[in-house]
Length: 427
Image (tube, rainbow, N blue to C red; front, side):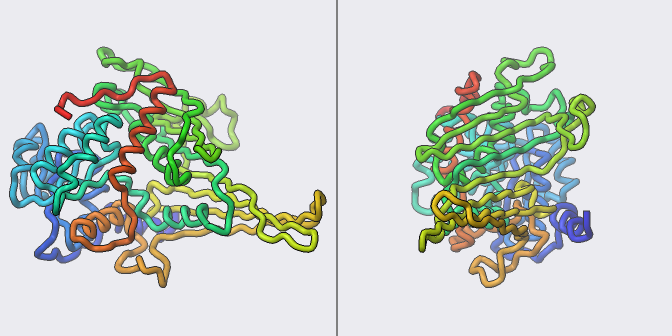
C-alpha cells in the first residue's frame, strides 16, 4: 500500500481536516450509538462546513454518554423520542437494527426532521412502499429522506457507469457482482443473524450487490432465475427462526431485454485463496476486493466494402465500496474485422482508470479532494438537497428504494426463505 493510499485512509477515516462551521450548518442527531456512524457520518462531518454532529441517543444512556465523549458530541438524550423532539436538531441519522428503520424514519419525518437512513431502508418492500410514498414526503417543504447507498455518490462509480452505458458501445449482456466479508468478521451473536431483526446476508451486505446490478442494468430484473443460500452453520441457542437466516446468498437474474446478472453476497467467506489448494484454505478467511464485472454485446462500428468492424467491451470495477482507499476501473475493447465469415484482424485496447475526484472541466468538479470518502460525497449531496442546491445529480430517490426492496424480497422467495418480517409499528 503506497503513501497516497495511507494518506487517503488517514484524512478520510482517521483524522479528516477540520473546517470552520457555518452558522446555518445542519445539526445532526444520531439514533443509536452505532459502529458505522464514525466512518459513515461523524468523520465526514468534521470535513464539511455545513454539518455538525450535535446529539446522540441510545437505549442505554450510559453507553450513549461514553459514545458522545469519545466522538465529541455535545448533547446526549435519554430516549430516541427526546432526540426527535429537540428543536435544535435538523436531521437524523438512523443506523439502528434493520427492523427499526421504518418506524424511526417515519417518526423522524413526523417530527419534521430530514433523514439519512442506513441501508436497507426497511425490512421488506411493504414497509418501503409505506415509507417512501408517505404523504409527509409530498407536502410543501417536505423533509429530505435518503437511503444511504454511499458508493453511488463517488466519482469512480459514475465513471464505471459511463463506461458501460456508453452509447457508442453495445448494451449490457451480462454482469457479475461479488462482495465478501471474511469468516470471523461478524461474531456469532451479531444482530445480522437474527431473523426477527431483519437480518441475513441478502438484506445486509447483499443490498449493495443488488443495488449494483440494478444500476448496471438500468432496469429492474424481470425474473429471479435462481437463488441459493448457505444457512448458519451453528446458530446460537434460542435464536428465533434461525433456519430462515442466510449467511451467504448467490442468485441469478434476467431483465426484460434478455440481459443476465448474478451476485454473490457472503458475510462469512472462507477459502478461495489464489495459488493454493482449496483443501488448505477452505477454513481460512477469504480476502479480496469487492468487484463488478460487466460484458457488453458486440457492436458493429463500421460496415463498408464488404468488411465489418465490431467491438465488444468488458469492464471491471474493483473496490467500489471503499474507493477512497483504492479502486480501479479496467476497460477492455476487443476489436474484430471480418470479411464475410472470415476474420481478417483482431486486436484489443485496454485501459485502467481511477477517479478519486470529478474530472477537470466536469461541471461537478469543485471543492472535493482525493481523500474524500464515498460517505463524504454522499453527505455533500444530502446537504445540497436540504439546501435546495443542484448538486452533482446523483441521488437515490424513493421509487429506487422501493424497487430495491422488492428485488431483495423476490430473491428471498426464490431461495425458499421467508421475506423479513414487517414491523409491529403501524404502517
